[in-house]
Length: 195
Image 1 (cartoon, rainbow, N blue to C red):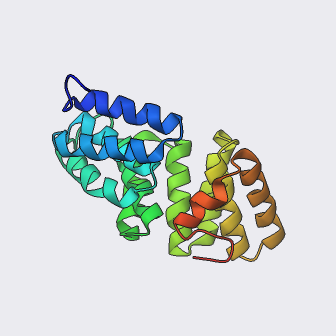
Image 2 (tube, helix red, strand yellow):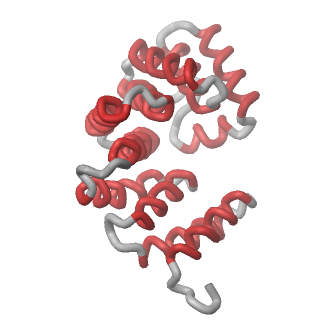
């Protein structure tokens, strides 16, 4: 990067390395620089969106994903891009009806992928559709039992539907899998007492 500061691939790689070493400010700086340079709808732009979500900036990922999806309506990766947009919308609590459509379209396209089901569970949780949220999370966990986010979302959905003890048990499992889950979820207003 000292030789070629506008090398988008190098910026994205360094962002991933910084993220792995818990240098979130450095990673954010690299992602922002890459975003300014990456062509709309490119693979690089899609990587920027994924890193934005990882850096707890899901709202920043939405316009990038919108552009990518618009340009890649027949792409083999469309299902995973729809899922990313569904997840980003649900985390940022925006356009939830559209997020639900994205999740359903991704599942119809690629099948009941556990990541897609996890995103669907989150959207249903945000919409207050607790039985549907519980069903989606349970299906996700049947395939991927060590997902902290799925356990956390399932716990919240159960608590809000009146299954308090079962929900608290799922939250304990989520915290065991990821001790920082409460802090990350709280950034999105997702708490046992909140929305």
